[in-house]
Length: 416
Image (cartoon, rainbow, N blue to C red; front, side, top):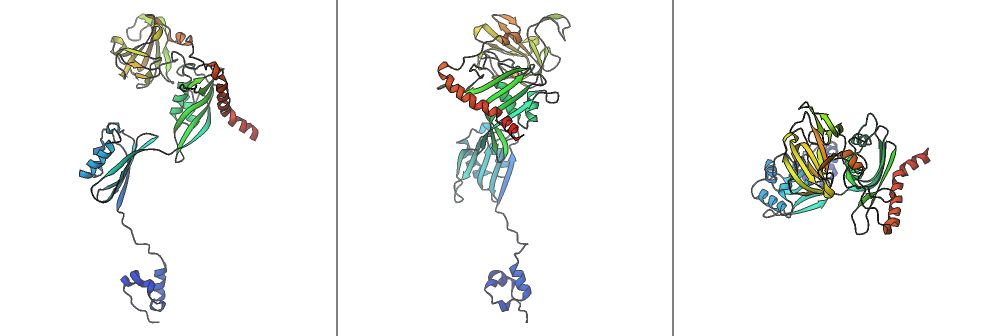
């Protein structure tokens, strides 16, 4: 058969309509096979990144060539919903942008729970955007996590990390048991713990934690249990398995955990810089510079500034004649006269004043006289217990949550 020469444009546009006898075998083969060298040109860019340090929303868009009326309208729409001063470095964002500079969608992750979304209302006419703050979809499951303090994992954070979890869980557990355990000095090899907690995942990855529901910590042979319970009309709190409050008037330490006691309360100690003996009216905790320091109890800040050899110092007056002191700070986060709650940040560890290295000097006064903070904390009474009329409801909640702590172990035993 004589091969007919058919223009390429005809083959592309209407070859399917040609009679079969007008196409050679070679031509029919090429028509049956999809073309592999045709590239579709994208009409948009999808940009992803993290917010750089010391930038603004306008500068962020300018970096991506989004300018003029487009940028002004977009920033204005965002500002109606979100405080632009709260733009945080390191947070991820995405921009769906047309090649002509028009933005179809902008997303900024405010935190682990919320996403700022600016959507273009229409591709026609002047730019107009609708901005919302959406919840980030997550999956929540109650899980049981266990760990042990040993030579390799000799701190709570290390043990939590070994269990495959994040530092937020260690901070949460330290908060729950802060009235009973000083995580800076009380931990011993062989201590072990179990925690039942709400665990959030996002796209299969750990996204954070909800409240701790129950916990057991065996510290130096002493078994401590904590159960979360919300009295009717009250706020959630933690109690032991008998319904006694785990919250004490004072936290056991102004540092969460990991620091070590480098110098104890003493009536006579040789000063490391001055070289002569004098009273050491407090406890020194060795800790990394910048570690957070919190108030051990609610009160009013009476001093927030420089105090001679104590360097940057915060003093807090508490009820019942107590006053706490935090010395040698690298930074102060409160002001004199401010009311603060138990566990609120007052500053960060440093070595200001007469100090040979980063540490916190923590002092405690009772009725104007210095007392040993460690002994005084041990003698603090617990908070209010579960009201008698709610003990049955508490017992039901306790049994359910404590059961979660041991469900995994019981499953293992059954499988063995």
